[in-house]
Image (cartoon, rainbow over all chains, first blue to last red; front, top):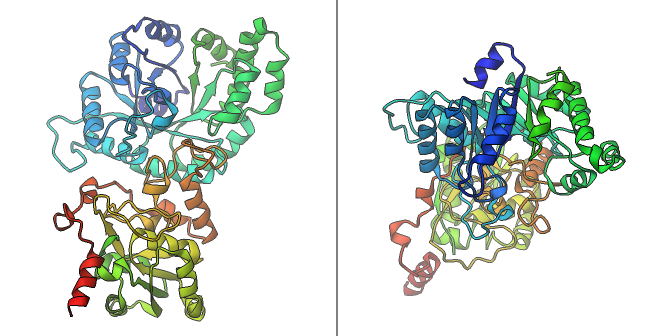
Amino acid sequence: MKLTELFESGKFVITSEVAPPKGTDLAEMLENAELLRSRVDAINITDQQSSVMRLGSLVASQQLKDRGIEPVFQATCRDRNRIALQSDLLSAWAVGIENVLCLTGDHVSLGDSLGAKPVFDLDSVSLLAATRGLNEGADMEGGELEGKTDLCLGAVVTPGADPVEPQLIKMGRKVDAGARFFQTQAVFDADAFARFMEEAKAFGVPVMAGIILLKSAGMARFMNANIAGVHVPQPLIDEMAATAKEDRPAKSVEIAARIMRKVKDICQGIHIMPLGWEKQVPAVLDGAGL
Amino acid sequence: MLVTKRKPIDEIAGFVSGESSVFLLGCDGCAAASGTGGESEILALEEELKGRGVEVVGRKVIDFLCQKALVRTGLRPFSQALAKADSIVVSTCGIGIQATATVAELPVHPACDTISLGGIRGEWQGEERCQECGQCFLEYTGGICPLTACAKQLVNGPCGGAKDGRCEVEPEVRRCAWEVIYERLKRQDRLDLLRSAPMQVKDHARMRPPEELRGTRRWAIDIATSEEVAR
């Protein structure tokens, strides 16, 4: 099922994500996916996030598909040139994957393989355009395909970037290149997100607000210092800091649900990044009335 | 030494369409030796642009556009002509174009592509870097090279990785190149360029050194000098 079909039917779309293992043991990833399956429309499979070498997103996506869980195959430009990326997209379609999220990807220097070549032959915009080309039956060189893809194209945007205008300009370029839905970087400040949506709604493409479960005040401070485009407002940090350790999961759920209630009427879906707290996701959705 | 190749006049004329007048700038170093930026080439470029209805309010060939101090002093006598110009068309390597874009407040347009030499260097450069990519992007990026200034070499806008204007790679020393590009274009009231620029795709085939420059240590400037000596 393509996410675009859900948006077109008027559904408020919920996605979450799981990460493939560093190794071959898929048990934990599949368990996490099972915790989410009854409550979400699709699950993203990250592509070696933070540039840490792991099992690939393509095969992990196929594993979910085989179990009846709708995958969103994340494809980044960090590790593969245009030949490999287009090939993986053909492979994805051939094994039944219908949704792909096209990203530039983190730089190699953030990960665990510091000497690796940062490829970035394409970027998120040209990858979207290349995928749209495959949908139309031709590769980037115009070569005709024997059997084309019909992939649903997603992209990402960072609503909390400062300045946000370059992000909005690039969002427009992604729409022009074929993006049909957006998932955002984590939203903690509902008012800032509302200001972003005032501008972004002009593109007429569904936007899913990104939600990260805050595990502690320390995590919030770490993200504020280190994660691009993420800003946890001080009152939320204070709220977490004032919560006893054993009560933190409940507080985390309450905060996430509160943010989601504030933003759900101004966007078209939610993308939850549980970062290990997959168990809490059903409670978050219950709290948000979703 | 950097070797340059003049862009087709149609491409250059396209860059300046919508502008009423331009100033032409050449370089008497490598670009003159490459036959792209010397006095006679700048005169020829002026004639070609005039033939397409572009008004040229002045021209100058400076020794070593890669050196910002020389660009600054070289342009100083032309402040009146520059005040009348909408932009500067720079016929030299990627470094000279960027150095001019840094020094002059006017928008710059590249008239050349810088061809790969496969690693030979020797120019008198400052912070500007040129990758000799053979498909100069400077027209669309405010005269700041996204291949050398952006850690991911992104050519269609910023990633989401910058924090407080710093790159996710070595933030202590690197600014986000696309934020610098954004700021310069905003200052020049040219942000529409970021929205309207054609989608860019890197052509790595053009980054290979061409046959006549491959496997040789001859510099075009040396060849030019030795020919002069011979005369």
